Image (cartoon, rainbow, N blue to C red):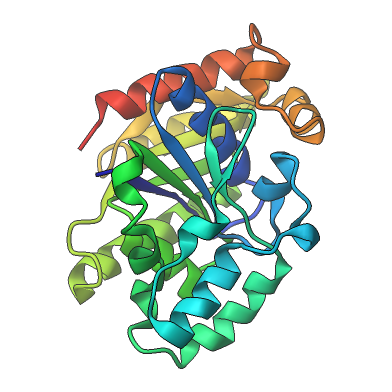
Length: 261
């Protein structure tokens, strides 16, 4: 059965999609069977992989809508093979509609878990890209996952969002929604070691959070190569294979595999 990892933190601009995409590509490079799930209505992961959300017949949203009608999981219809060596469950802006539809659904927190269950035996790792806030879609991702990877932008203002995420993980455990949910680690992103404020933010994060949960040794530096690679529908590993970004995500993939549950 697949390890299911939610990439989640209630803040935008932290590198969730970049991490989901490039960690997935790095894991596939190591021979892992990888499924990426775009569970953010912005659909940035879907578009980065070269798909147009408006053209898709089957998405994470259509699977949710069908399940709420028939209680039969058909997420496999949405799975797309990509040139990056990973499979993708794409999404579209219509996933926004699921917020209201799930609000009145039976066992609304467990829908994604039930959708993924038939797919899990086919993969080694499933990565879920989530919204930049807490709500029913993110709760679905946290119920479906065994682990959470928390991207932390190397700035003081971003640390509060990590605290909120860790509180949410504790809530998932205490409530019984997912008693075994673990924090796989905090990933420092958009790091610029040339600036004092970034170096201090990195040191602060390791000191404050490192005593509570793992903080990855790998750091992802700020680089224009990341948006360039996504605009060209490539992973950073394919776009700039010898660059610092590719090396970082390869190192992160090794850390993730060493931390296998």
